Amino acid sequence: MERTIGVLTSGGDAPGMNAAIRSVVRSAIKKGFRVIGVRRGYNGLINGDLIEMDMRSVSNILQRGGTMLYTARCDEFRYEEGLQRAKKTCEENGIEGIVVIGGDGSFRGAADLSARGVKCVGIPGTIDNDIQCSEYTIGYDTAMNTAMEMVDKIRDTAESHYRCSVVEVMGRHAGHIALNCGIACGATFILVPEVPYSIDAIVEKMKMTQKIGKHHFIILVAEGIGNVNELAKEIERLTGIESRATILGHVQRGGSPTVRDRVIASQMAHYAVDLLEKGVGNRVVGMQKNEVVDFDIQEALRMKKPFDTNLYQIAHDISF
Ligand code: F6P
Image 1 (cartoon, rainbow, N blue to C red):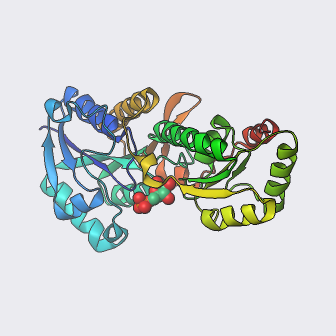
Image 2: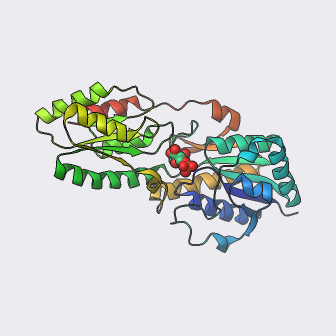
Image 3: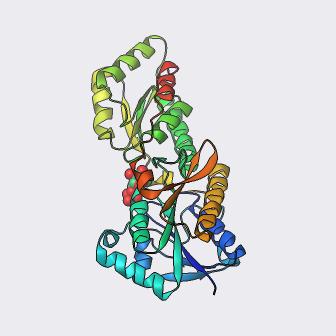
C-alpha cells in the first residue's frame, strides 16, 4: 500500500520555507510516498484544508519568499479537541507522518500530535535563529541580509544629517539578528535581550567616539528591548545629537532566500523525509557543526542555545 506523508508550515513565515517544502515533496515522491500539503499550518489539519502534491506542484517556488502552503499560529491545536480533529484528518487521508516546518511553538504541536500516533518531524524555520537544538534556522541568513541592506540605507541618511539612528530588528526574545547585523553594519551599540545594558553606557560611547571625530551613529536594537522611539528621544536628550528611530519590522521576513537558506532548507527537508521513511517520529532536525542531525522533540525543547558573547565583545571593541 502507498505510504502517505504530509507537509506543513507553521508560525511566522521565513524565506527558505518554500525550498524546504519542495525538498520534502520531491524527496518523498522519489521514495514512493504520496505527499499531501497541509495549508495554513495546523489549522489545515484541523479543518481538512489539504492539497495533493506532485513533482510539478513545487516548481518555481525555490526562489520565492513566504510559503506556498501558507502559515498560521493555531490556538486550537493546544487543546485536545483540536489535536483529535487533526488526528482524524490524518487517519481519513492515510497520513502516517508529517514534516512540520516552523519554530518552537510548532514543535510543541508536533510532539503532541506524535504522542497521538501521527509521526511528526520538525524542521527549524524561523528568521530568529532561536531554536535551541540547531545552530541554524531556515530564513535567518536572508533576514540578516535584508536587515543589513536596510541599515546601510539608513546609515546614508544618518551620516548626511549627523544623526543617530536607532534601528529595531526582529528577534522576539533573541538577539542573534541584532548582533550579526550590528557587526555587519558597524553599529556603535547593540542592544540584545541576552545582555543587560544601560543608557549611560550608550551615551558614554557616543560621546567618546564623537570626541574622536564620529558624527553619525547606528544603535541596533533587538525587538523586545523596549520602545525604540522613546530610546531615540532619550539618547537625543542626553547627548544633544539629533536621533531618529526606525522599526524594520516584517520587511525582514520577506524576499527571495539566500543560497544558504535554500541549501540548508533542502538538506534538512531531505533528512526529515529519511526519518519518516524509517518510521521515526517525534524528532526535530537541526544543524550542528555543519552536519544535519536530529533530536527527540522534548529534549530539543529543553536545550539552551548559547548567545555568542565573544562576538558581542568584538562588536563593541571595533565600533568607534
Ligand atoms: O518568530 C519570528 C518573528 O518574526 C519574530 O521575530 C517576531 O517577533 C514575530 O515573528 C512577529 O510575529 P507576527 O508576524 O505574528 O507579528
